[in-house]
Image 1 (tube, one colour):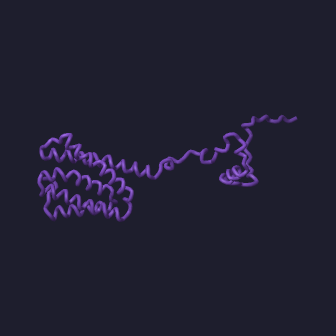
Image 2: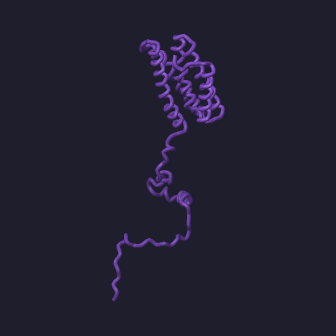
Image 3: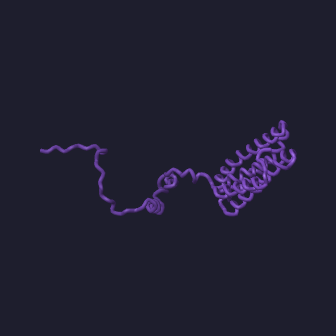
Length: 199
């Protein structure tokens, strides 16, 4: 008499037969909801396919939150750039900046930078905004070089830090080609007008 092998339930090979009816998972959930089976089970009505699968991290944040984070990530370095330029212009003319002078520059400057960055960052990929960045870069940079070469030290101390911040921001937000062309135009203007970058 032949002995039969005893198999544990975990050792049963899976059947390779296809099911009689192939129904997608979404249709299965629709049929289950329509039949009302889940309402009969306590706590079963809250189970949906969306709750059983982990959510995508990008879906957790709203588009406004992502825009706000992107604006904050650009606002902080540009505020520190404004502060650094304020220090540099004071030390260039042999003056030590006091806390009152720095507060007077930063208190109105930070909200202006934050709003400006938030609204321009939202539309930075449009052609009109890229044209705006291009023109802003040229105008602010040429004005900065001109006041360094021709204006008084008081004008330099008042206008150079914000102009430098605007010029850097405009180049950073520009696409590569407009940024390169604007810097090329500025360089040609400096050469044509015989300006110096350093006093």
